[in-house]
Image (cartoon, rainbow, N blue to C red):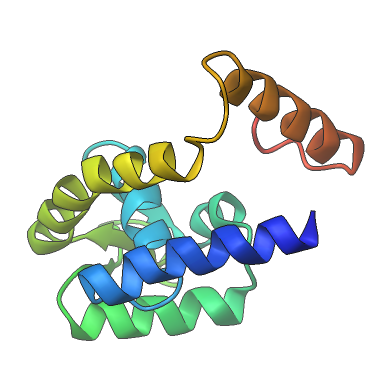
Length: 139
């Protein structure tokens, strides 16, 4: 499992960095916010839970992406002034929309060794393993 994980991560990293100029994990930020629906905004806490990485890693990713104009930190009006939300900019939304179909094509390529029914079976088995170790984020 570790060897496969390293191999697939290398493939995804090559897709993100080499082809599209994204640093590790930035595609995940774009797509997590895009999936949240309009206005493509999440609290830092909700984003942290959805992304399954450390708060320090989230902060570094958001800092880098904010400099590039892909995301912005916003404070909700009338709400808790300490509360910060992370929001896709229009540039970030366009980037996510442009990259997502290519990302799906890349994943299809990476799973091409499997037969027609096997990707669903693989997803079911991986979900079962995750759940058995306490990860219920996919349910």
